[in-house]
Length: 320
Image 1 (cartoon, rainbow, N blue to C red):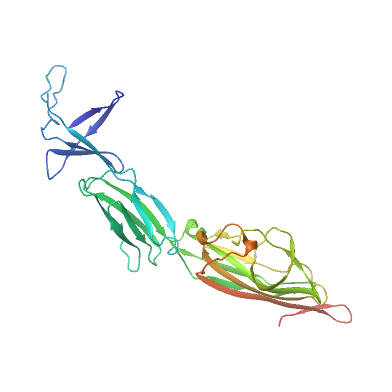
Image 2: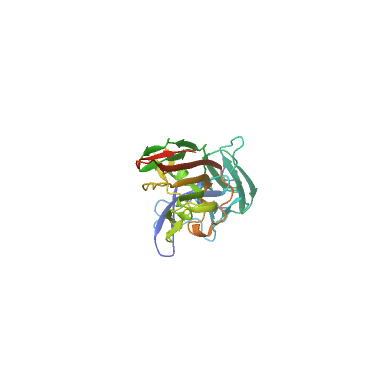
């Protein structure tokens, strides 16, 4: 039957109660996702209203119906991450009232996939090693129809593909280009954007004894291309290499030393490209060489170029 609940501000809200199978004296209705109004109707008042209460006396005088609002809300409601940043994630009940407690469940169940442990007000999510979408559900024990869900995407990076283009020698320039790319599971721009490349460089580019070519690093001005140890290779103070996300891939590319060579100029640069969880990489402070943690995978490449000129002044390149 259709019953109406009259609020304190005189708004009439239509409510349709359904009986619980275990007890016809307890009825409930869903009024919002995860929110149920439960009526304990021991006197059997619900269903005794006359068609026209103004003409027919109400049969429930002196009796009562106990109304309880059951509410379940999971926080956080949605997450996307990888096996590293999602480890030990806590999902908890907020703005919730569920007498008798709740049952936490996780679906789907995947071999080597995510697990959910705990009960009561919180549960701990372990992401496992499989990239897929999961649903976490908290269900009221007292009113099983009262539940709420949260959604988690565990994304896992695929192997990094490396493409090194052979040297293009067109005196006075010599260029070598390197491309790196990967895909993720599940495949989406959001999953691809969860990971990032950071490139480090070591070595030098000298034009004569003790004189080096310069490069603008970290947006802090020109510095000599003479790095005894690995340093973050970034033109801005953000360590992350600017990505190109398209066609189902996350790409980066680099072509060092594009300026014309001088006679006797020598380049000996060694690069290391690492793939990281973006949540573990600071978005500033590259000039301080911050700790970056352990990459999922690394690739190395180099640029080894020497420019020489003959007696006629013709330039040529060698790549030892």
